[in-house]
Image 1 (cartoon, helix red, strand yellow):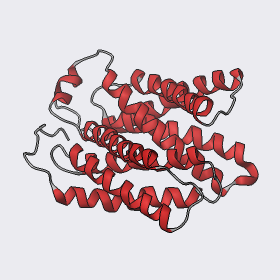
Image 2 (tube, one colour):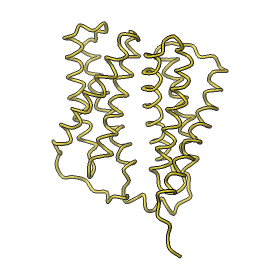
Image 3 (spheres, one colour):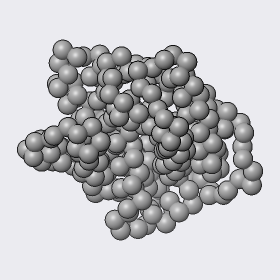
Image 4 (tube, one colour):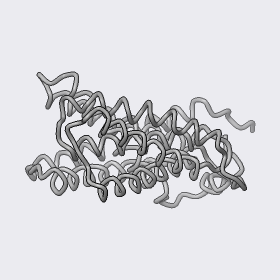
Length: 257
């Protein structure tokens, strides 16, 4: 369904509260599930921040109107609560005042990004024009990168948590599943035929993963792994998008001649 784009004149506190509730569940559970296994600060922070993207996307998608600001405000409140919980529970990672401020900004920013992606997946009045356009739509590439990266981080770390004996095997499975799901979501929710956009998004998401591994947690990734990852990211995202397009067509009423 295509909705009419409009901006609500005031902050909708109902959706701020729902954003906080959803955020505490998603961000909190993600952190406390992986923290005992992955005691690296950058990993724990990344998983938390991805939780903000997922929360923002849920609020942006399910709420009527434009509620990106509500998701952002909710993200700041959730980050405040999470920092308090880390302090109260005496977590192994400790942040300075400047890092705490940075995390508040990142909580707001990642929630905004998720909210924006959720709004685009919900659809707006510009979607009607996109149905007739055959141009390459970078908007859906960006949405695909956001969804792909978020799902990939959650799938990989959560699966690795429960299957440490075969960590590489299940991390690879999480990688493939997350890219297929992301491609499916973009292919299904975007108007018209959008196969190229999710495929390109898969490549960019792999590069984003590589940047994080190399420059944030200083993990050296062999060139062959990167090449294989780029190829897999492209192919599985394309496959997921194809499935999404097929499903979209199967539930779309056929026009009468």
